[in-house]
Image (cartoon, rainbow, N blue to C red; front, side, top):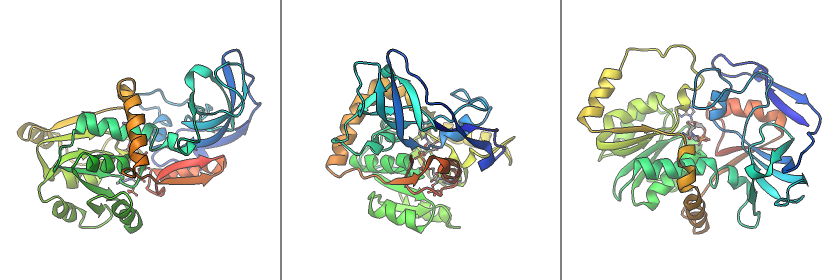
Length: 334
Ligand code: NDP
């Protein structure tokens, strides 16, 4: 069993030295379990949080423990009647080549329905995050303006496309001309702004002549600064992620802007609501899978995957993800 463990906790930007590649025995399985050969590993921004000991919504990965992660795997041995060798499943097996898993924790995937990698992206956790966060908290109405950053990624791209399905205008923010062109042309956003443009704030204002009704917050940082003055009265802000600050450590710099924020929350009747997608899974998971599959089938939702070959390349790929080096849903093919 080839696996990657957390070797040390990063200070700021992670380095390859924070990870260690190890060899271990293939695990034995007990009754009710299956042995899995991992085919694909999902890399996601939350993994930076698990590497840190700071208090969060989920426990930190321990030093020496296998890095966590969603996976698509093939059953190679089964001691549960629900699964047989050759079945393809969604599991949470982490950064390793093989794993023992309880059958109850697996979901069988049908490769005839959709490419199995989509269970890690558009039809999986990131797609669901976009769906639940946008529809439950953002509640876009026809004609409203929805803004989302990290717009070429699996969450942001789905947010903009679902907003358009609901009749809203979608304005995306992405890093660099290649991503911006893709967001406009393939994902069909109404406008796209490059957040590296020195005049990002001016361009965003020009792209949102009627202000912003929904800001789906994925990044924080200088994007939030540009969005904030454009928020309309009654704007909704699902706070999904703050990837611009995941590598930060220690106290946040700068003057205290909380009083200014609170004044605007009050005077503009803003709704700012953080969420972790898990809270919506039980109630909305089945509807999501059905609805998203139909949107993909009729072409109203498109997706992009960025597949990197080799488990040994996962550390570099995760480090790059936090800096925008990925282009689409980042997946490791083992
Ligand atoms: P992406 O594949 O979109 O990757 C992250 C992207 O963030 C990068 O590609 C980069 O895109 C952008 N980015 C990084 N740093 C900055 C910065 N300083 N300023 C602006 N953009 C930056 O990731 P996901 O779609 O998987 O995730 C998007 C967000 O959703 C993350 O914040 C993630 O943590 C969050 N999330 C939250 C969940 C929840 O339950 N709350 C569940 C899943 C995801 P670019 O090059 O365009 O700048």
